[in-house]
Image (spheres, rainbow, N blue to C red):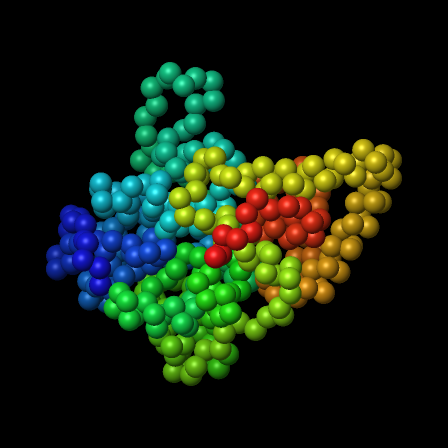
Amino acid sequence: MPALWIHISRGALMSNVISFMPQPLAGEHLLGAAARWYLMTGEKDKRVLFSLSDRLRQLSPKFIHHPMFDDVLLKYGSGLQREAALSEHTLLSYYAPLIKYDQLFAIVKQQKHQWWSTSKKVTKNLHSPVEIAPFNSVLKFAGNWRWCAQCTVEDSDSVGSPYWHVAHQIPSVIRCYKHRWNALSEKCQACGFVVKDLKDTPLPPIQNSCYACGENIQPIEFTKSDALDWIENASFGLLKRGENLLSHSHNHIMQRGVQNYCSRVNSISGRNYIFVIEEIQQKFVRWVLSNGLDIFFNEPETALSGKILDINVGAYQAKNWHPLSALFWLKFLGKPWPKLDAAA
């Protein structure tokens, strides 16, 4: 375990709770650090987590900004800088380009954005807005925690324990960001075991041994394609550490890429725009299927005909879209990506 620990006050619920918060490990999800703290207490009563936050909810990766984040970050005091922690230890950087600025500002700064004046005194809110990822019920990998079998071994050797990596939870990736040849693991094929809540499963299975039945959990099976490589690398690029959350380097391409394309199609096709854009949509659907990208959805047929992949949503309401949707379309349309080597 790392040597650095940050002191916190004891919760009233359990008098014998360990009173130190573990410093997040490199690239560790903040909810994973909270789960490790719970494991370290040795308590079996999950209510002990209320001593970290009275806003305890399911410890799920589906949250862009979890209700507990503000309270947990407070426990670190000056030992963990807020914006850096949100960038490295949550998925906020991945989602940031498609979050409305006032909502993002409220999360990062814990205060309401003042559009009309910069001189007004602004008081911080106790809690910033809770954000759940859009379309998370449609995406296969949005609600379950995932891990890399090789990372669990390497982490155990280097820091004494496996832990939950933020980059493994990106809904638009299948493989590990460190071991690009390794598919992530998510579900036991023998008994159906998955990890939805870290209160129940604080650490990833070591060497893919299922916690429920003991069988070996096989990595996710997928179809390799250049399109998948591009989408995964671009996804890691969105999560790049040290990114300015309020002025993300990928804001323009994520917000305007599809919109600008549709504007050009409209200027060329005129009254035939609706028919032309529908033909493009149908070509896109065939492209998704031919590249094996339907693996990202619980019900591919429903997803392919719904708003999550509707080009019109990206053209007029991109900030209501999921990053996966924008990335699919950007690759299909051949849009240049600012940096495609982020995974390296």
